[in-house]
Amino acid sequence: MTGPRPPSPLKGRPLSLKAYGAAAGLIAPLARPLLEARARRGKEDPERLEERLGHASAARPAGPLAWIHAVSVGESVSALPLIARLAAERPDLALLVTSGTRASAEIMARRLPPGATHQYAPVDTPGAVARFLAHWRPDVGLFVESELWPNLILAARAAGARLALISARMTEKSARAWRARPSAVGSMLKSFDLILAQDGGTAARIAGFGGEVDGRLNLKRVGEPLGADAAEVARLKGMIGERRVVVAVSTHSPEEALVVRAVAAADAEALTIVVPRHPQLGDQVAHNLAGWRIARRSAGEPIGADTDVYLADTLNELGLSLRLADVAVVGKSFGPEVGGHNPLEPARLGVGSISGPAVENFAEVYDEMAAAGAALIAEGEGELAAMLAALIDEPDRLAALGDAARAYAAAQGDQLAAALDRIRPLLPAA
Image (cartoon, rainbow, N blue to C red):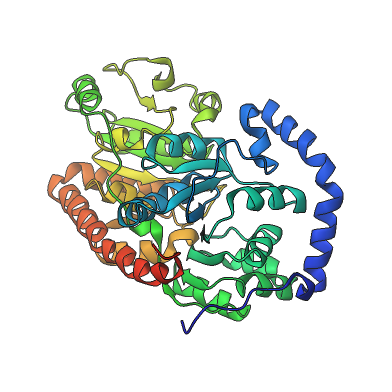
């Protein structure tokens, strides 16, 4: 990178972005009733709707401010190591973290370092964005993964914030959608001073739209092992006894039933712990598993000798479940929802994983892990059952899978240090 790129002037927006901005302004009066309707369905925090409209619920700290934005749980959690490093290196720098979902807000409330502030991101209407930026006045904005909101990005740039798109991800599906509006995505990408792509495919797609990719960073490759209460781990292990445990990680209904059937076929005595991606849908998951003997964590139900499935339908306890696991099955990979989830979360705890074939969101990671003997890919339910049976029958093979997974995860930490070297020049002077 040779220096800061010039801001994208508002007058220079392509026609598609001018039309988007005009349309967003016209529908702005509908934002509040739409948010209130979402709140009634549990999809918005009714106590914090004003934040979504750009009205801050906290004072801006004095001095320079760095803003980190990540849309949902996965992106927010992946940003935590970066946030922690910034807090440690630059105690003079106020940190504002925004996200768009209730689950991510709850996790950030627990895990942000002292002094960091969480707010909900404003909806992408001109008024909400203007209010947000006028209050917070960020010196730098770090956007995680694929958050390309035109009004927010272009207005932040016009206001003088240095911008970075880090751990950038653009799938082929997203690229196909953007190809209908190439000048729009090109204008947004050119607003970033720094772009660090997750993988080679993303880098090529961004470059195809005129974005300048400055390096690589996949935040989901770095991070500390997920935490858990040691006493609770011991209590649950006492209930489980000597049974083998398969943890189904971040499943999407009706995928859970496929995994439970495969585990039962592999070992009739094994316990399946199901950790749904959206714990609030626990009732639906339980309905899908009717016929199996289920204990629900949200209801405080104990694991008995005859329990087939422990439904871990609580938030932010994946680290607990993984500490009970012999092997993990990573969800959103068998369908109908596909794309895969991060196999490094179990790997950091020395738990090997099996995934279904549809892992395009983490294709590069899975290819590398499979080559290193750190993860397995099952083409369907039958192959999953066979793989589980082989691992359960051969303890040495199961241990080798876990050891390889841990070694692979440990090797990923250098990415963050290299990325910070790129990010530091964007930060305001101490």
